[in-house]
Length: 140
Ligand code: HEC
Image (cartoon, rainbow, N blue to C red; front, side):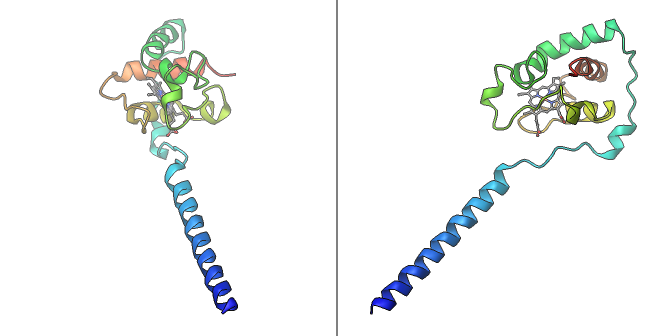
């Protein structure tokens, strides 16, 4: 009798452990966003704007109005709305972002990925390119 109780207890514990592990694994799977990669074709799109003071100033205007609330003044992902996001808004000063092509950044800004909004309807292509040029000034 004692062994039966022990066995029952053990198998129940094993079962609970199994349930617990499965739950842990699936939640990790659900909540971890996969790395966001622009399609290779995006790299081919060339920035048509001059990298000059005028473009940077125009890009800053777009950035302050549309991006800074999440991405922060210096692009570190520490804007006032960042704390309400489920995932970090990234850090534009790092090589992980700066190492991407202009075309890839243009694509990401155009398409968005939750919670980052898509900007292709809100901004025109020139404004999106301006924001890309401005992002380059946030490099460390
Ligand atoms: C509502 C908050 C929010 C706003 C507003 C926002 N973003 Fe984002 N952005 C995010 C989040 C969150 C991510 C990370 C998304 C992910 O990894 O899935 C992100 C990611 C990015 C990335 C990809 C960075 C990388 O390293 O790959 C770029 C580029 C970007 N944002 C640019 C912009 C620009 C430019 C604007 C304004 C035109 C903007 N974002 C506005 C929240 C925002």
